[in-house]
Image (cartoon, rainbow, N blue to C red):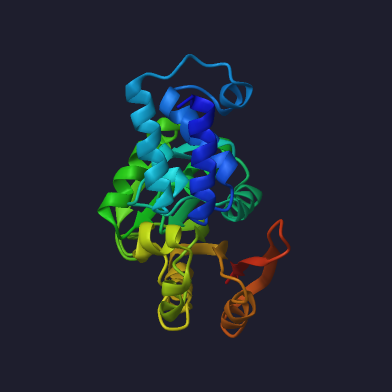
Length: 281
């Protein structure tokens, strides 16, 4: 079978498997198997694959048919213009989470100290410090495996000397550190809804990074208290939220002593981030 025929067959198979962008993904998987670019695949400018490369393409297609996420198969994901290593130990970075990086840069400027709670791949703290070149950060995560991936990414993107990684539940282990900005993309899917997620998410991404408890708000309640202790007076907290959760999280903060509580939308117009400021005594 010609390579072009194998590619078309892969597109049909991925379509049947329910993959949303079968043509794009088949092209990317072929490019990976050949060690070339998608542009080269689309243009047909590549050497005739070896038997080993054909076998690798088949392996990748079978895995994607089984709804293993494309990012895990490729081993990397782009986020805020940077490349991050990813695997089943961590949540795959998503475009809407870039809101937290933009917020951190807005409030930190070029200096200050950032806490990234539930750092996962380290994408938020890494992307922020890559642009705030005098800032420092701490990434907190309960998972030792996730922190191993984060360590790889802070080194890969040249910020390892300015990032400390701490294993702990939320801000446990922060000690006496006081931060100018705390950001978090916590688990926020209600426990009963995890089973309804797309197979790529439900079966492949870590449940620890998804399950937000009975109503999805468990981590916000706990983080709100811990963040207040760990922030400097006048410091900022920002969290990503699931669809429809922003009003409840904002109300939780407004019922306490948080000031300037604001909801921001992502590019799709979905209320995706809640931010607030610790009052100055």
